[in-house]
Length: 173
Image (cartoon, rainbow, N blue to C red; front, side, top):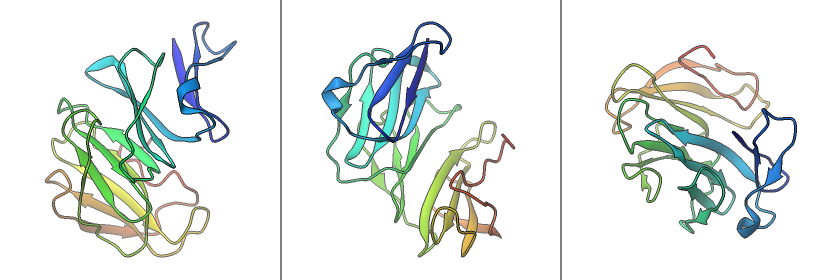
């Protein structure tokens, strides 16, 4: 099955390789989904980002719970090496969850620019990358930041790494 979010309305699920899609997030109303990931250790768990806070499903996307944290997520990434470790961003800072996206703790932002995206490194334990900038679509301001201690401290790696809102992906994908 496939699960996808959209900026228009909710989360959709496909049982036929994307030929048809069904809305599976009625309880979220018209809430736009800005990011959506599967838990790499439990394919039934999904974590999404919305303008009202994180959403989470524990049944493969059939039902959803909104956590009204006040965090307006732009990006979400799960560590493929550490169970339960999920990163998220708001426009002003990164966040970390150690319980699979149920709760999030604010991390120190390495930059005064918008935090656009976050990526947990797929093979380096504790390594996480951020992209920051002035605004999506504008390649201005500092860009690439790396942490080797799960987001506790950050080092600037390079400037202006993107030309759109996707940010930097250390896997090259």
